Length: 217
Image (cartoon, rainbow, N blue to C red):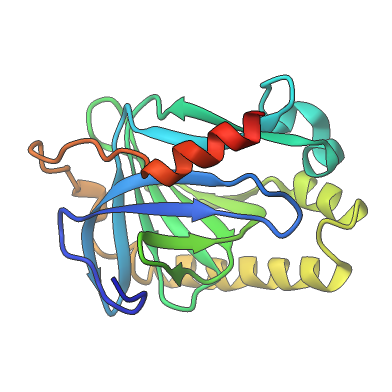
């Protein structure tokens, strides 16, 4: 599939986060809800097998602290997505994606604005680099920043340069402007989304299983 081609509802893709400093990745297989000029919307179902970077002892990266999480050695871990599913929305040329988290009763818990580099399309899905700083937006439209301390730690250890950190904070201000104006996708009605029950849970592509074996050797 050429990277410029759009997917159809029900297609299975991967949403991948990579870094320039580490070989490990975060890979989430998901099902396409829609893909048009506004961007791509992907459902990550509960029980989906995903890849995550973890510390060598298997602990979450955050256990290493605001600096160590960026400098300590990482290994690749295969895990199951637990809890409720999430709806991930990628926007063309935007420095963030928007995720919707749902409660057990299906109602919206919050919007999560994940600052990241603009999406790159690949033959199997999309990929991007996480920019650490995020925002949480509640259904009543109030918001707050998340992980400001981690961004400061990333800058201290050189994971991001001072200029990159300034650009990330500027991306946060752009997201805030979009939240305040309640632009797409906040205004799109995705808080009422419910996945098609006939959709199977996507599997990790075989080559990621091979990569995981290599990482563990």
